[in-house]
Image (cartoon, rainbow, N blue to C red; front, side, top):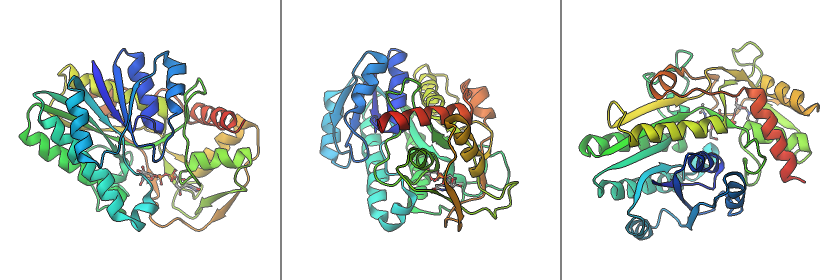
Length: 338
Ligand code: UD1
């Protein structure tokens, strides 16, 4: 069974390709390498013994997308990761985000609507909830007005898929709302490869630990949380990758209850920035250089998932702890700086 993974050379994409290949799926990757590297293919091959098919292609080029689907008519499922994801950049360059994240989604859905059966998994985000009123966050929590064009593309993306599914009974889709992915593959062959200065907490921690950055800035310690720093639900990337495989199988096996479903993908446990730092210090045996600075605009105080729906309906559960995930993130950081 052939599955297209867009953005399959990226952080979550590459880990998902590994899990798909481990389950016997034939994978074809589309990636434009704008935030990834072709060498990731070798990492995937080292883990699974198989190099996935790969086409370097910019999904904004509509004709090329059409040609791709004409050449790969046997694609039965699509997992769509390819997107831009830097919140700050999206404020600076909104049209880039709308074109990259919305335009390409429309092109892919148009191709899937030409088929008489297709399964589609969408990378969504807990950002759609904004600062939710209740913790843990359930899937029926209201979607809040987006704080950034990036967040807006995830909300709009979900709506576009829902609207399309309503009139396309042969299209089955699941949106996975990720909390905070982190870590790297236990083999040390693939992991996160942020280009430039990392925006996310965990790669910034490990880069500081290895000496690439002087110190970590902790954005605010005056939040209404036990230690004053923000709380997030850090999910191990391999757990997250497995959620995609389970979701895809649900659609391919026709086990879905409706042709558009939404699931939170998190651990259900919230950890503060200081707890994440402590966990790094424990697994690395190093003291992390950090200082408290002002809050980062747009940050919410607390977000962690209610995972009941994913646990019971998808039959998926996160297995790794923050510390285990941090350990793999650290092993990876040391390996790539060797
Ligand atoms: C946010 C979005 C997420 C989106 C991601 C894209 C929410 C709830 N989450 O994640 O959907 O996919 O951006 O990048 O809107 N921190 C520091 N110092 C740093 C970096 C981060 O203290 O140098 C803190 C942040 O203030 C935050 C936590 O670490 O409290 C996690 O930050 P980050 O990794 O950037 O993820 P989110 O902002 O939660």
